[in-house]
Length: 241
Image: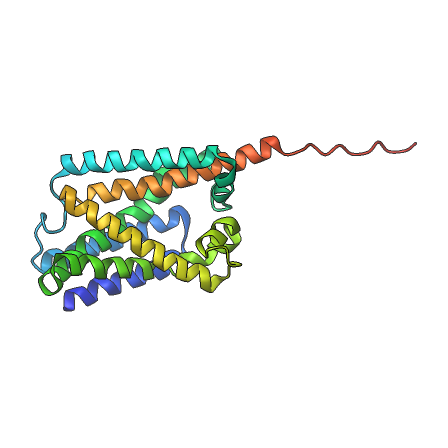
């Protein structure tokens, strides 16, 4: 279990550092931590197949379908007035260049690569001999949920409507946001793990994960841009001579 402890330690340190070093600056941290995780797993005897690094064609197909479903759901959510408010998120960049940076750099290389390597590849492979396939995925999903405690601190301020919806209508608070983040991301971890098992490749959940985050930023950006375009124009009263 030394390898498991080492992998969890790497993820914990990377999570704390990334919470302090955000944006593009966090990408090297994530890539370096990913490399260390792969080295730990390989030294522990894990094969490429056990890590989900094979079956790339099947992984791409499954991941593309899952990403398409996410895109359709987001499009419907943005189009409907009742759900559009859930996408009004301050964390979305204000400019097109900023959106491209978030969606094409920060999400895939700063978030998805590390989280999928850690929670869908390395930890399940290391835990499988002791816990079995389902147990290993369950433990990894639980740790994936706990991993999101630090990022959840921004949710209440950045997207109060989503924070309230996640808390089942109860006025949002940092504690409720953290609990909701742990529960929802652990559930997402179970879904991602099932997709990895079905496809035999970590590429499939990585594509779904990237679509969920990147298209989420795009949806938030579109909603905020629409809000600005439809905002009433304030006309200053003419000054008296």
